[in-house]
Length: 381
Ligand SMILES: Cc1cc2nc3c(=O)[nH]c(=O)nc-3n(C[C@H](O)[C@H](O)[C@H](O)COP(=O)(O)OP(=O)(O)OC[C@H]3O[C@@H](n4cnc5c(N)ncnc54)[C@H](O)[C@@H]3O)c2cc1C
Image 1 (cartoon, rainbow, N blue to C red):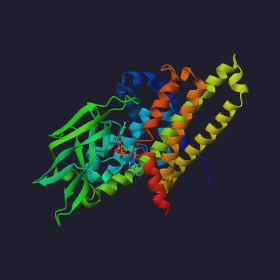
Image 2: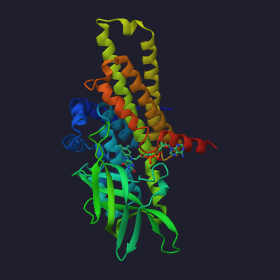
Image 3: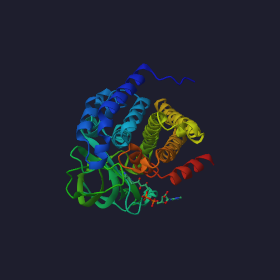
Image 4: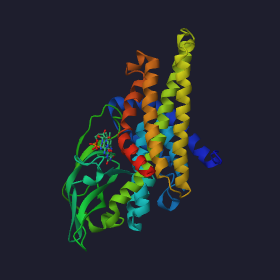
């Protein structure tokens, strides 16, 4: 076994760390407070090639691997999880779905600007009655002449309503022409498709700079060739790329847990100049040791899953582990560090309060902790 990163992977990680420290961290509090999408920061990430790291150069990417991509997500999320979340949705999920299942024409039109970071993509699966049970969707797509006519709605869809979002890939029920059977397909809906409407932005308790909206399809029309991949396998396609999304949440939450830990260390060092109680009480050093160990395990889990993916090997279970363990570790560490800061941690002026609120989100998105456990348990039987 070799746990060393390659020189290229280290270069990408260091570049992302520098950018996160110098450009992202000073703006993070402001982005959270105003809830404004950081277009300028995203444009700089695009210039540095961050959105296209794992995609082939011929499609505007950097020709790198998924380990590098996830090191980038961890580093950015250490400064602001919002950027890790944008990369997760745009690159790991939407971009990858286009790369694997798109036609050459779809790749030229949609993947290249996404890989170059000029455009963002969104992933539309959740509906009012279909979240954990993603197959229970009600949105329909019917072929009429040369167009798909889509009716229904999606809720809680990230990266929507932005100037630079180009498409949302949605799941919809349709009837198979050959035998009339109801199946789930995936369709590309450009932001200017007739009949497509973006609803109000959700006012979230944290990560307020990520644009999350409800979407409406009212006789929405897109050309027939905007179907993505195999009409019979739309649901499976969507679930397949979510596997990488889970590794991304593992990397993102590792960055978040590390950020909490960094705050704890800085606070204790500062406190040690005056009040020695945080150091002398055994409670805190023991907690720090546990936190450091859990963060390391979280990191190892997402890197192992990403590495297996790069080798073309099965990584389903490892991706679930990375998501579940990473997100629960971030929540736990954020709560522990908030207590170390007590009572200051409860004040908005301390970053730990932002981290604490952000952490909870990652136990919900891309499959809640309960669903991760269910799937892991099924995989063991
Ligand atoms: C900020 C934000 C951004 C999001 N972005 C996106 C996005 O970009 N695209 C997208 O498609 N979706 C997105 N989502 C939706 C998210 O993925 C879903 O909310 C999540 O999958 C849970 O689905 P649900 O909300 O319908 O909850 P439900 O499925 O109704 O679950 C409610 C509760 O019941 C539990 N539960 C459900 N079924 C079971 C079971 N069988 N056994 C045990 N417990 C169970 C769940 O764990 C949960 O605690 C986003 C959500 C949020 C909050």
